[in-house]
Image (cartoon, rainbow, N blue to C red; front, side):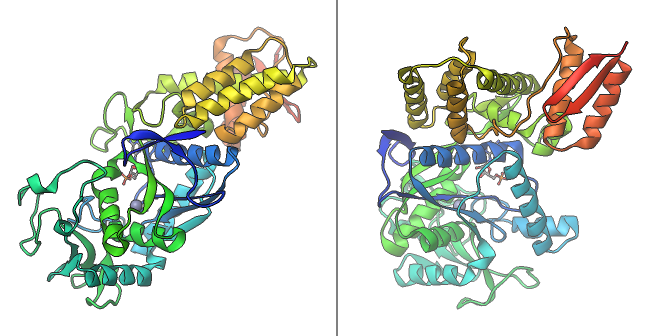
Length: 464
Ligand code: AMP
Ligand code: ZN
């Protein structure tokens, strides 16, 4: 039995797909106006683990992720400039160039982390006519109204706006939000469609003149278009609960009277040294920074598995060092089992498999699942059956266990400094960073160690 925590009901519930064997799922994807951080990637690792767990349980997936390339304003509500246009102005590029550049980098990071791509990737700008139809429907149904600047959703028309985050709009006074548009009927009303000021770069013809979609309407429209009015799971980061997802629910209720997803699952934030990641503190890290420091990107993935996705996770470089050791131990443990010749009873294998399954099916309890993985790695009896079991677990972990080459060293007692350089070189080679690999080889030579690369792996000898 699979159980997931549902933000909507605030409890763990048994999960089964609404229809047949296919799970229909929607994930709020990136706004492609800047580099994705390792924080964003934590949310994507959560999404990937969820996909892998569902597949491991034998389900098919129809998973949609959107790419927001218009309409996400500087405030997550509906105020300020469009993030894409702000970025285009600052970088002296067109919004299209900005979108293409950051979309490419985003997918490169997903690939580095061995994150499987959703079946459908939907760009907001490719789905504008459907969004216009959605807005028309909201107006027809009496849930939206036009002002001189936008089409607003009237939250007072819903009996339960705030169902996901528990806000009670009746207690909110006008002015509670930063800027109040005098034409708004209620302070919590939000823009579904925005009229473009003159010289605005991204705009489309619509019944309301040249204009562009609001961020929230994009997700409501694309989820309904590709997955239907009600689908199984909606995911995102925890910050999306109070505004974006609340507004998606409001829009779907306005359009068809239904909450669009049965399960709402949210990933907690990554903290840096116990606090927020922010430009002003100079502690915004990208996958690129992790690679620059010589780590295999998958070290970050195994680092993320040390916390449950619903708990905050504190990023430190010491934590990354520990994770690098874990990944190396896991790989070495796999190879040791692969060389083993012991026979293990099927009962024992099945017991481990069952424990692993129970952990992942209990709301993706990856720390517990990893403890089962370590139990198998540490077994003193070396057996190919255990190696196969670890490969089976890797379908969920996605740590490319089979694809990484084993680090072969001679039985030389190596100083820790040399061990560390060898590990960094191995990771550089895994990500095909030949320049880094060569410079580490030279550094080793200077310290009196010769590295020999072969198909079987890396060997080190002391220069006489
Ligand atoms: P942003 O680039 O801030 O718009 O973030 C895009 C999405 O990534 C957010 O909606 C969050 O769901 C997620 N996200 C941002 N920062 C973090 C973080 N520090 N930890 C986990 N997820 C994050
Ligand atoms: Zn969304």
